[in-house]
Length: 403
Image 1 (cartoon, rainbow, N blue to C red):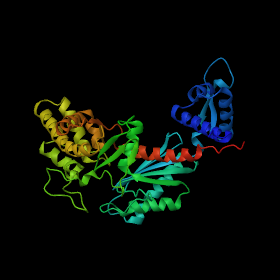
Image 2: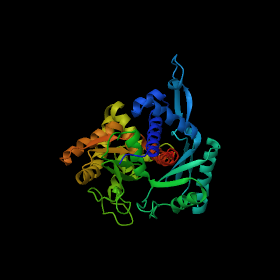
Image 3: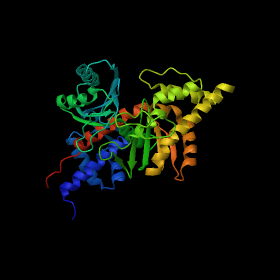
Image 4: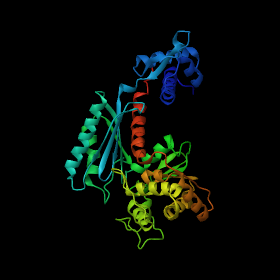
């Protein structure tokens, strides 16, 4: 059955808005070319979108010929603001952006392990409010939150997890109670995978696994274009994976003895110490990231024994990472594994190439290994993308016109 005129208009409007979001300002002629619609249809939709406050004239092409085709139309990016939060064990980071994802204000706040739950929540909420205020008086429409732990795939709620601060779960509930905005929470590694798929090392990939290497380890699984969370939201909890090279097995309440022991920041630091590698991490940075970055630099530039020690450390680390990657490859056959997080980004292609070589010797399934392009910023970028998608789905969906 053919779409009604009103439905067709709504579909055309949404298509034009998506193009303006992806491509930036366009002329009516460019919209005609990209949408395949007729000139009168494009003229009508541009007028509708302007009247609805979604689109405005932002400039001209500079052509001598004046008229509608010379005008550049762009999305009204300041119609609403978005916020993204990266909630870590000892800190929270906030970014506020417009509807096109342009950063307007950002801040980071350390939260000590001795901070009481309610005090930690109030400090995090105040940080968001201050940052949003600096961005301007425009109201927040959507807030994306990235947090460690499991997110219930049915309710969308952050589940109570052992080993994580109580203020994490309480913060999400408080923001949902106090803000008129839509509040969305997602596992931090899943958000990093979304960001790498849209903007980084997994661009164009509809099947891949992201291996997060930060203070801890985790994985995000994307199969056939869809993020897979598992029955309980626990898909990718690779830190609990039993692996050789540890003194004991992980348990239901702790991942010590699992892959986390080999690839978590503490395990990487212990390995680096064996090779005499030292480094001072930046504020809020996992020590493993600074150590890996130092080793990559020394392996390429340092003379003699220092370079050999750095290269040997990277080889051993790659052997460890390949154990987890081999398990992922054998079960999921993802075709590509992205080494993300601060340590994965710090290792760059030098570490990724080593892991790929060792992985090729462990499995007959061809698996590319790439370094993440976004590092620790991947969580905030993914949270912002989630908030932007939610806002655009609502704001950029013009109501069908009767007729």
